[in-house]
Amino acid sequence: MLLSAPAKLNLILRILGRRADGYHELQTLFQLLDFGDELRLELRDDNEISVDSGSLEIPLEENLIYRAARLLQRESGCGRGAHIVLQKKLPHGGGIGGGSSDAATTLLGLNHLWQCDLSLSRLAQLGRTLGADVPVFVRGRTAWAEGVGEKLVPVETPPRHYLVVVPDCAVSTAAVFGHPGLTRDSAAITLAHLREGRLDGRWLEQHFGNDCQALVERLYPEIRAAREWLQQFAQAQLTGTGACVFAAFDSATAAKAALAELPERWRGFVAAGVDESPTHRQLAKIAAGA
Image (tube, rainbow, N blue to C red; front, side, top):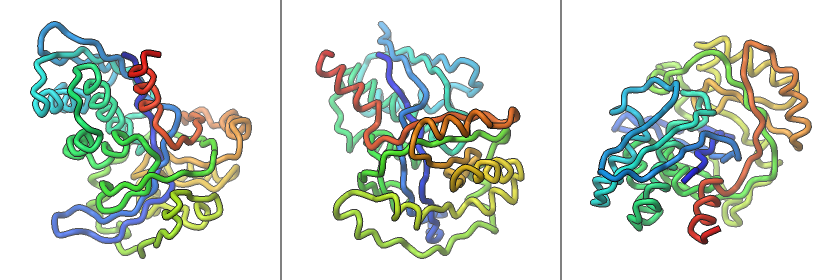
């Protein structure tokens, strides 16, 4: 079974405050993309889990793919094993959900391959123990999120293409959220628009922003430089805690034209925003025998 593990962007990220447990109350808009990692999942004859992550050097016990597989094995009582091969396309620690998406695709794929029959809600609950962003990938919809990111409302966004630029630096999410200079008092957005489940471009432009951006750019000048370069083409901002920055375009042609001018010291890619995860579409075809 070959499945996608799509990237995400935070089109909006507001930090409303810090909770007593140390986590932060957030409001964010997760936009799924049609580009990401790929996972090949194969059944094993025993109950072992093996993972080939290519050049990604992470100890097995810390690998989210391995942890997701073991978690599903334990929670479902499944006695089967799997060999999982990761084809890494997304930058590690880029703020675009690579590891979380890999974990979610592992849960979704093995739930089908092992015939566990766990519901999406149960898989999302399991995913939440692996990371705050895993549930949005499990549920597979572009979504408005609140709480620490676990309260999800599916939304539709305008069809747009995104140029994502990857600066040559790594950002510690824990360090950003623990930094005293982080903005933690943004006013909450009231979402009457969600009654229809559709957010238009004008509303998105009005609320576009990321409360982590000012601090991250102060700590990492390379990220600021990348965003300022991208800003010449369209409104640009940080996603998550970075390091990636992005801008929206009305067409793939316009986004690719900007990508063609990208300085050599950075990497980048163009992807379309999607309302439904490619992983869910692939699993639906597999289930239908297509």
